[in-house]
Length: 174
Image (tube, rainbow, N blue to C red):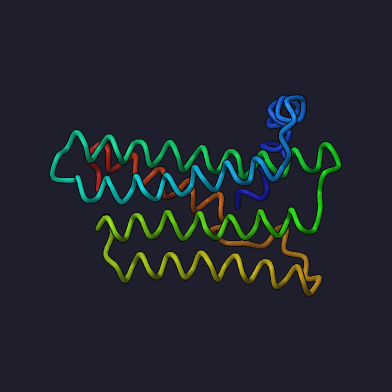
């Protein structure tokens, strides 16, 4: 779904990519920043869950988890724009980016599950679905099957959904 507006989003990130390039950051630097923020998001989801009986602490951690998750997604989008804009794309970089995305997915879903913020079967189903969707896309690309306009609930949509559900929870809407 979001693939259709991907080009618009990427054009909006050109200024940030120019700044990143000017200060000497590479796409790999941005990928690593994104994974660190994603892991922090997972940790904060876990802390939100184990502190949910204390509304202030629990909600503070939940808000932090959302901020880290969205920041991770921002860096994940920015690394690709930087790579394409400044001709820094590489097979190794694309592989690293894809691999680190899976680690972020695992960290976030694990934090949500370990914190008890969702029922374990649903959390496992979401994690497995996320990993298999990404695997299917990577495999199709390896087989030269175009998938640019095909995809249900791609990574960006999953991040936005998790963030939105978390924010709704902050406002008392389960």
